Length: 265
Image 1: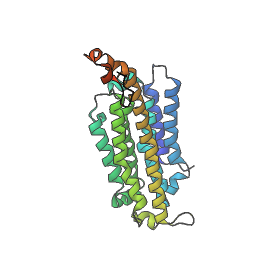
Image 2: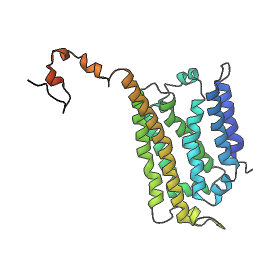
Image 3: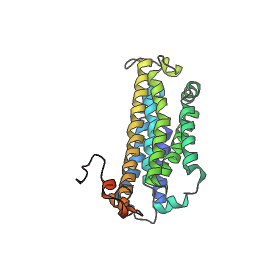
Image 4: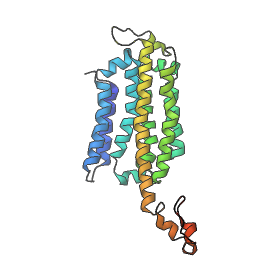
């Protein structure tokens, strides 16, 4: 074990917060599983061997911690929050889509600027903790409109697609830049593993693939739900055209599908 402030402080605090939110209510099994998994992910990211690898040796390990805090854990934690608690917080300004998404992107891109990234790593007992907390807070904001928002499935699909498109360049840039851009990891002592440039390329590819899996996967799910809702409402059914005003007065030839055979005279 490699206990850190996130493992012995943040993870238990998250567990206590979920327990407090569920007090007096029966918690369904899916909510319990989601909340437990979210807390376990945060604990595992900062209590296992990943912690010293991220703080001393490999960029890919640090980026993995970042995506846990900014993407995976927030979504799972929000799924565990009861609806009555979510309804009370629905008016919070930072949970609005046009605020949450830019905020999350600003946090993500700012902390990955090389000089800020290196400064945080050189202050592991202060600034690095601030970085991790802001990732988690921004992640909660960006996922809130999806998990607890009242907008349609189509609006949520568009929101997730925007998140995917706008966040993907960061991982791709890290993978394609022909030199290592983080001096902290360039000069880190390595007795095994990839070179600094290969480490950065692995981190970038992993980050891009992870975001494609998470955000594009969620986008596809909501898009399918939107299409199913539209079909259920009759928007895509032939009967909707037949019931339109004047539809019954059309000549048979005009109602025929393109390429269909015309009646003989």
